[in-house]
Length: 595
Image 1 (cartoon, rainbow, N blue to C red):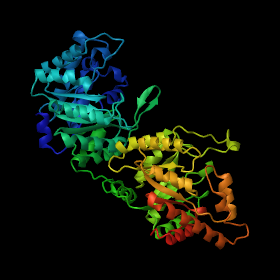
Image 2 (spheres, rainbow, N blue to C red):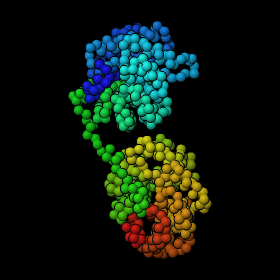
Image 3 (cartoon, one colour):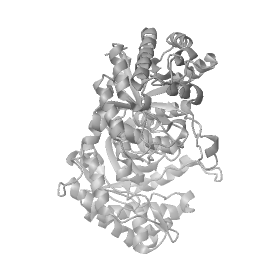
Image 4 (cartoon, one colour):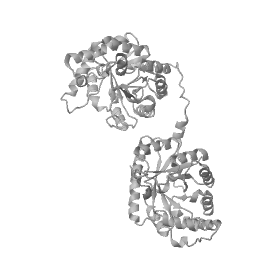
């Protein structure tokens, strides 16, 4: 039976599991001896093949993965016997059953410490297999396709009707072990698709760990080729016990997770490191429909991922937008935050932004706050994410979580510095700055979030003492992926003029408006908040003996006046809500006829 016949006659088949780790489990010998046992004790190798076939495998691999002169440190007749015996044992185990035997050939890479002709090594190995009647070959655990193209070409030269599987190890970060990005790998496969019969993923991670990555890989391959698809994950991540690599024995969990691949056009599901015949028996049950998966009904995540951002759509359509910022609580009570968000939504605000521990004072995480506002108030959210407290791993993690919660916009900021009195006790991180964070999000948008990217926002200070430097910094943010900016509060005519000038740049501008609510509030912001420029004439409109209502009305009138001056020069308004007093923002929106 050929590989194509096997796949055409069956919707999905089970492949075998790991030879090396199961060999070690049975014999207590190191896996480095596994291939040599093709001639030392062939019966144990034949037994392993039979156990996998009895477990339901219709596709098995010869015990020759490491059978080359560099890894085994032997050659000539001994190596030939190992390879030929390896194929013969697998074929004998298959017998007359509907089982396809794949001649397993390892990729051979250049080694500066070894002088050898790699092409001649491939020819020797392949000729050994062909002499035993092999017509189906598998190259597995690959980091790139170029390394095995000489071998593939030689096989096709000798056997034009041969069938070839190439299987790659792609790590959870989307790169192969040698750092080749998945997109580059896919391009190489597509360029050589006429030489291949099937392509797959094996090793590197467990079934659950590579699921999303593998599904995206398979989807891209299906778009541009008619290649069959295979997947052979590890049993999970291993541990080292007494110097030996040991995998957790959880075949039921593995099989249930591997069963998730069934709806994705897969032709064969098997196992790699750590998987035993029991793993294959259980996955075979899922393939045959003898076992029901308990996880098939989970469908909410794709719906969240597909939902598009109305905020981003409005910006693209040049519609005027309103954002409003709330401070996260400095405790566990979210009542005021959620109540304020509800008032802002009812006032016509398009998106709620949540600051990230302003002035370096710890408050509730903005992404968690945003996710809760989104779920409970049903309004789009824009968390601020600063670099001060997180290294690159933490930033990536929080972005994954934000995207999974349906958050489709973030404000990337470097973050306020920690007060001098805290230095030495509280350590800033600053692994990245705002522009590098934007670049990171842009990369994630092209990879992890390609189906539904995150809109990147940046901060801009139109009242900066040297506006030319601020504008140069803004241009860098645009080049790093920023699509919109939220400005510092605008209080001066000079700041308005600055916004008029940058309107020519390719970025959407949301002008910052912060209503002043008291004389004390005005003086505090002017003198104690970094970057805040408030003219004395505005402060002069307040007095210490004003009632709360009188001061609030003055602040609202000032905000409405500023909005009228700049609304035709910006793409939206960004309200900074004083003390989370959302009713003040509602009055400004009403009085300025923004909604």
